[in-house]
Structures are given as structure tokens and as C-alpha cells.
Image 1: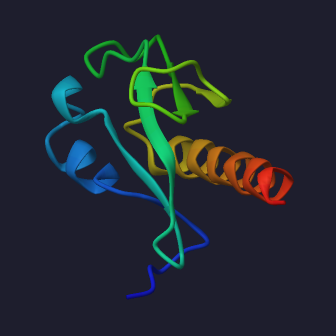
Image 2: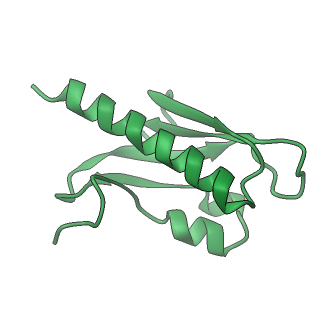
Length: 101
């Protein structure tokens, strides 16, 4: 079954709806054809501190080194979250196109 976007962050909404619970700050990355590319995760983010940001990371393994990353400011603003996600998935899409044979 096709997914809605060219790059899909599986379980990202769950992370948001849990109030940015660190236990849910990761998930699979899949293409619109449901091809698994790797994992997304959020590092260095504390939702209780509005003076600090964090970083989205994409890796081939759940705890592997980041291939793509995007820094962000406090995420509890839809504008900040939308801008960070847009840049992050664009970078993953660019990486995925370069990685194809």
C-alpha cells in the first residue's frame, strides 16, 4: 500500500502526541512505495526547555551514525517543526536519489 509522501517518518506523530516522549523519538523511514530506507531519531531535545533545540537524524541502523541531520529550535511551534521536517525529509530524499544505482 502506498504511503502518502515521498519520504515518510513512521511513528513521528506518535512521538508528538506523547508530548515528545524520548521513548518514542525514533522510527522507520520509508518511501512512498513503502521501501524501508533506515531510521529517523531525535537527539539533544528536551521539550521542557524552550531555550534549546535538538536535531533530527537519519541513519541506516537505529543506533548507527547519522547520514543526514537537521538542527531545529524549540519544536512546540508548528512553524519550527514544519520547517525542520521539510528540510530533513528533503535531505533524505536527496540522499536516497544519490544512493540509487
